[in-house]
Length: 316
Image (tube, one colour):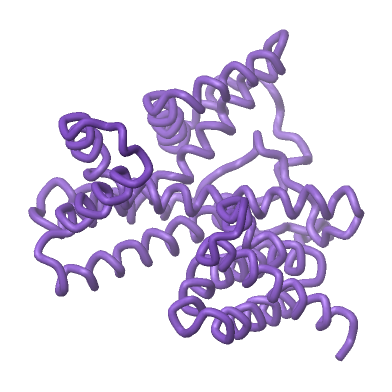
């Protein structure tokens, strides 16, 4: 076994152990679980998709040996498969007529990732429909047990109010955090590899992010089903649409960075902006809406005074 395969197997094993730390009650387990996909991204972005495949498969086997079939399945779906998908797409490239390398667009990768996560969320919801009386009711019971344990000081009225507020979008929020977790892991892996000069693909500029036009259709369809359907189908469609809106949030962030960099004191402005995002749900929604406006109205192209530069070298 050569060095790359040894690294791949080790990275996959490390990823599996990190993903199961939460189940074992290890101190700091939640952080380990959030970073479980990082070793696979590091392997994939530095050694290629074949080694990423080996890393994912080795992690799947190790998770199965120590945690059983369910742990292996969860690891494969939540960490290994999406990390492999992103690693594979990130390294796809073509050559332009002038010899310049054209890398697969980051926006298309982000769209594929959100579609993958939304698809799994929707499939899980449809599967559970046949075994529970009501999906919102099931989630309400879960949240009631969780908050009764985590916040025993809440009164019954406060607990009911909090659950009523969360239950309508809880699956979408979980799916959104899943996509964000994977994106953060990918960005962190690329940053580390760039510093070590081990990256296979150059880092694209965030302000140049664009999304493929096809990405709007799944979200529009799910939003329409969420408006027209009823019961659990409506619930699933609405929460799936939330996950499919995540790429537009990143596109909105790209527009904000593009706008702020033209102003004085751009760094303090961005720090303030991200603090507001951290404490305000409305700010998150407004940024996603800004991303949708950019996609359909082309705000950057309308208000830009710059000529296209050499950094915009990807197409959708």
